[in-house]
Image (tube, helix red, strand yellow):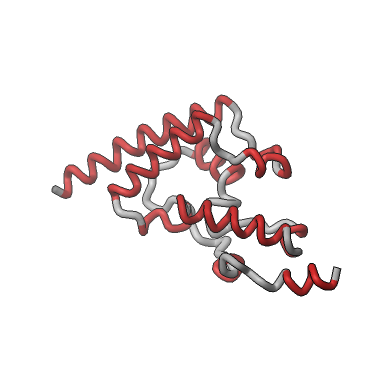
Length: 148
């Protein structure tokens, strides 16, 4: 127990909690219908934003390392808190991947669902996210065309 507590202060992927900003808006600049935003906020934000809710077990190694690794990887792929920092081309690519991964059931990850079964996307959620990403991708692409 003492060793677990001691190594809990080691953060192999950086101290992700130090950058937490619960007040930071997610997907700033994107047009997100309220029902889609609700799904993203309840099922995706813990890994794909800087508003991660860190459960009690995430304070103790090795669980803390596993969770920090997953959150670090997720933010590296897509961070809703930094949406406005992505180029329009990157946003289009991300929207393509988000739609495909949500629709195919690749997200959320299976091992995440073991402890967070409420994060599972329903078929309706999957379709709603897919349709939103298609519409938003089209909107962003038109902005890219207008800029050229």
